[in-house]
Length: 131
Length: 466
Image (cartoon, rainbow over all chains, first blue to last red; front, side, top):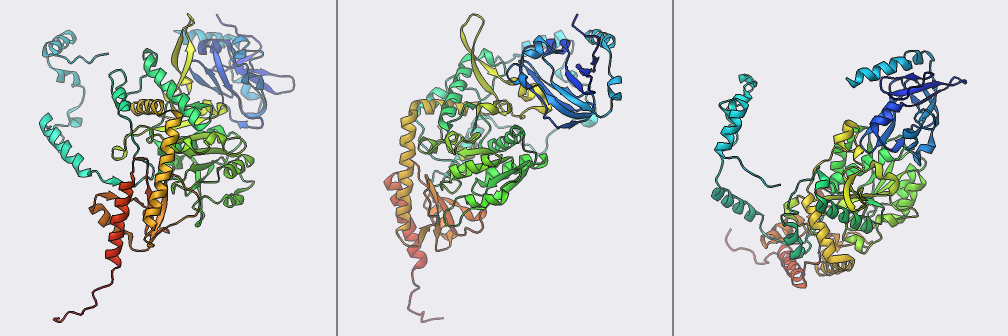
């Protein structure tokens, strides 16, 4: 059973989102996702200042067996990206919810996060996917 | 893996196992309205004897003219050993193995090829080849657009001194992808891209600049100036370089302060016969920073879990069989056999041999130009240095001259007026290391006779009878 922190929100495409105190949203991929993808070799993060729509592909995580798009869970503007992943992409495998964060954004409207799954719903979603 | 054809007994057994009486039964889902009875435009099959006869007749239609034409494909000597080895059963498959790691020998050969091309171009990485030089340029443009993340304009500067077919092919491939190819003029005296012509794009968002060296006219470009301008203006540099020329000239990796970012071009001059236009192969190399944007296969060297060295396809996650519509390219298989030949050719010649070939080409072209311009009716068009080909302007109509020379089984050169209407009566002539002094003398001799015949004064005696 993979690690699914309760304080985060989850997308059907396996991104997690954290609402920060300043209203910005940090995004990464879930522990289940990193496990499925395997050893990360490269992460392509978006550009700071880039505006994205909800559901728009804005980053790529590349493992030895697949290069997967990462979709922004909400609409907004990218304010910070995790440059450290350029040298240590394996952080996404080792610490998917912490040091493996991909980008932080200023959401267009906070409401979009409410549409995401909570940890329980995501756990159920993962179970259903397995069958 | 040997090919084992089925016998009638095999077929019968398989059909019985599946539970059908006739192979046609397996297609019974296809509605009658969609079935084709007979392909009316396709003639009946020929047997081996008939096909052999037909192929011989077709091949003889090409003739074997004495070739003084370059323009993208060159008549170089290929040592007999090259194809003797290339056609060995172990190598002799045009197909690109996707169960790649099973073919360690093939992968090693491709790895060696990549190493040689990276060395020849002065860059860090090479891929396992492209289809040809023209589509290689198109891929390089797409790669530069992807790789230059700071540029959003999709605008690429392409000199008109780049091979016309390469420009046309690139346009076909990129024009629906929001990419604008902007042509740069050439200097009418020098035949090169005017570095100053770039200044009108100064400060604008340009994704990449293409430079061909030597250019289509055989003229040498100011590669350092052009490269530095591009980099200072935030553009990537794509260098199209003739691989034989790079044995003598500065390779793309050493252009300007930082070197070109991507090098691509036609690999035919390396051990591939001209073969009436193909199949050839294209090469592509780049700096390490761009390697993830490079299309095509890349072979890597690694160790297995017992520490033994082995070869593998690497960075495959970018390819179309995994990444699908977001792949770096949809290239899959190509004429890998020619890469095999090229690798063996380069191994046999070595750096020194390639340099000698290049030197001989240069010397012979100079001899050719001297011989052809001696009559005073033919002169070089451009005054800059050139490598192994150059345009010559004829002061009499070219068509008649060419017709006469063709009748003497000489291919005098490439008529430039089709692609460059401003260069009327101009022939791009080329002499590789395979053209001897006797060949050159033959061409000059026939040319002089043609000129004499066409410029002779008419008979001064008036006819007595009307």
